[in-house]
Image (cartoon, rainbow, N blue to C red; front, side, top):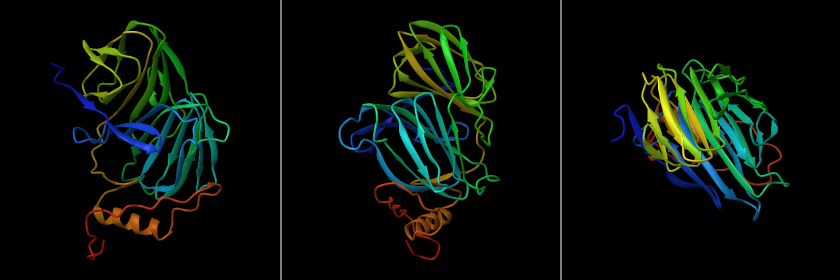
Length: 299
């Protein structure tokens, strides 16, 4: 049996855009958040050489930071702050939505055949969730080595390194790459809960085999994690202090109550607020209506 302070979370398959498979690990019925990390998609690896590749039209966000870590391929980000930024392998894009922002993502005209990435959301604490929107691009996150592993710290503080991007909760994220089979003991921050996802390869985690179909959750008070890589592997480790605020999600919005989320949907679909994304050749996405009624009896 798996350790009682651990939990296996199976990914559910979705399609981010036509022909682009996604495994979604957060939120799920088993676990809604890990620290402030409230959303986790593992995108690809997938061949996008046919057609236009990735085309995700302008859409809004509130109350969160979107976090993209690129493993293979490229994406072109545009947003309502007039940011135009291509993200390439080994780079981070962090968009702070705050009170509201809109953005699009697309494959550049000149692109590689394959795309492989992770996209996550970080819930903003109540004190910061209405801040002004912002965007950061980090081209060279800090790197260290531990035994057979190369570790890139891509958010927060971990393994003696500090990622340069600005976050608003105690949290961390790191990519761990082993070029060959080997064993690894990862020290963890005991005040954090953690999640470990295999991006490539197969590992044994405290004696239990784990591949890219499952995320393993580690409760607080876990001081270390023993891993055995059965060959070359790539892992994503996230963590953070438990997020002790109630968070509601509808579509691309994070709020604190249903009325707030309903109002975001109404405002976006009425083209109020959230700004304009320039340069994207396509339509903006429509927000689906929530299944509940607002306080005034509408939908």
